[in-house]
Image (cartoon, rainbow, N blue to C red; front, side, top):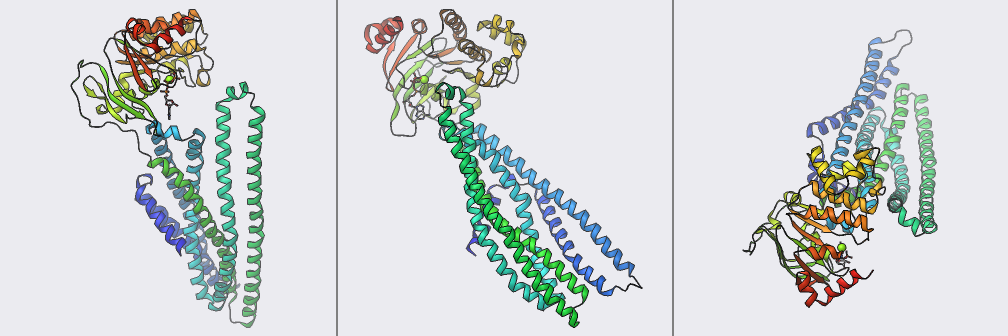
Length: 580
Ligand SMILES: Nc1ncnc2c1ncn2[C@@H]1O[C@H](COP(=O)(O)OP(=O)(O)OP(=O)(O)O)[C@@H](O)[C@H]1O
Ligand SMILES: [Mg+2]
C-alpha cells in the first residue's frame, strides 16, 4: 500500500513540476483512450469466440457471427497499430523535450555547476537516463495500464463464463504473482547496481580518452588498464548476477503457468465432460488464462522499472532544478572618478570554502590603457578575470563598468563587450575558421582577413593546403602553442571588444614566436580597456599601470619605475624575468 501511495505521490509531483515536458493534453488523452479501446477489444475476442463455438453447427454455419469475429480481428489489428504509433509519438515527444531541456540547461548553467560535476556523469545523464525515461513511458507504463485492464476485464468475463473456475484462478494467480514479485525485487536491486556501474565505467572511459596525452606521457597505461579491467569485470559480475535471476524468473514463471494450466485444463475438462461447462466456455477460459500470464509479468516489470525510472528521473531533475546563471541584478551605484573605467570596489571573494581568495580588491582599469596584474601563482589573478566575466559573483564589494555595477548589465550583453584570451588558448574540435568565428552570428571576409593579419597568422594560413578550413584537431592539438595563442588573439580581435582580458600563457615561446605574439597583442590592446595578467617583462614595462597581487591582496600599484623603487615582490619578478 505504501508503495502505491509513493507511486501516485511521485507521479503527481512529476506531472505538476514538469508539465512543460509533456506533449499536449489531447495527444496524451488520445493515446490513453486508444490504449483502453485496444485492450478492451482484444479482451472481448475470446468471449465472441466462445459464443461462436457454442452456436456452431457444422451443417449450418452462422456467417454473420463469423463476419463479426473477423471484423473484430481486423479492427483490433488496426487499433493496435494506431495505438502503438500514438504511444511511440508521445514517448518520443517527451524524450525530445527532456533532451532539449537538458541541453538548454547545460548551456545556461553557471560555472559553479561544472566545478562540481564531471563530464562523463553529465553525458551519462543526458544519454542513458533519458533513454530509461523514454523506455519506461513507451513500454512499461503503457503495458502496466493495459495489464491492469486485462486482469480486471478477464476476471470479470471469467466470472460471467464460469465463476467456479474464476475463483480457482483468483486463488492461484496471486500466489504466483507474489512469488514472481519477490524474485523481481532482487532483480531490481541488481539492475540498479548494474546501471550505476555502467555509468561509472562510461565516465572513466571518457576521462581516459579526453586526457590520452597526459596518460601516455605519464606512462599510466598499466594503471588505467587495471582500473578499466576491474570495472569491466564488475560489469560482468553484476550482469551474470542479473542473468542468474533472469534465468530463474523464466522457468519459475513458466512452471507456474504450467501448473495453472494443469489445474484449469483438468478441472475444466471434467466440467465439460459433466456437461456443466460448454466447449466454447472452456476454450474462452483457456484463452483468458493465457492472456493473464503476460499482464502479470508486465505488472511485475512495471514495479522494477518504476524504481529505475525514479532513479533516472532524480538524476535528470537534479540537473533541471539547478539554478541558471543570473542574467542581471539590481545593485547600488557609486560615483566614480573615471566614468568609463572598469573598477573594483572593495571586492572580496571565496570559492565555496572559507578561505578568502581575493581580499579588499580596489583598482581602476581605464579606457584606452593597459592595466597589468603581476603576482605569484595562485595569488588570484585568473579569479579576478572570472569575476569580471561573471563566472562567479563577488562575495562582497562591487565591480563597475562605465559607472554601472556590472551585475546590472544583461549577462549576454555584458559578455559581448569582453574578449577573454585564456591562459591556455583553448581551441575546439573543428576548423581554424570555426574557431576564429566561434559564437559570432555575422562576419565578413574582411573581418577575418583583418584579424588574421593583425595576429600575424596570414602567412601561416595561406601556406596550409586547406587554408582556413584546416582541421585543428581535438582541443587544437594540431596547432603549435604559438599558433594557438595567435589564433586566440585573432578570435578576440574579430570580436572588437570594449574590454580585453588577457591571461598571458606562462609557456615560453622562442623569440620569433614571442615577437609575433607580442606584435599581435599590441595591435589588439590598442584603444580598449585592457587588463592583462602578465608573465612577460615586455608586457609590464609597456603597461600604463601595474597591480601587484599577493595572496589575494593588492600590495602595490604604479608604473614599472615606481614599483621598481618601492615593491619588493615586483623587484623579484623583474629579476626573474631578466635571468634566463
Ligand atoms: N574553481 C575553483 N574552485 C575552488 N578553488 C579555486 C578554483 N579556481 C581556483 N581556485 C583557487 O583559487 C586560488 C587562486 O587561483 P587563480 O587561478 O586565480 O590563481 P592565479 O593567480 O591565476 O595563478 P596562476 O598564475 O598559477 O595562473 C588558488 O589557490 C586556487 O587553488
Ligand atoms: Mg591563472
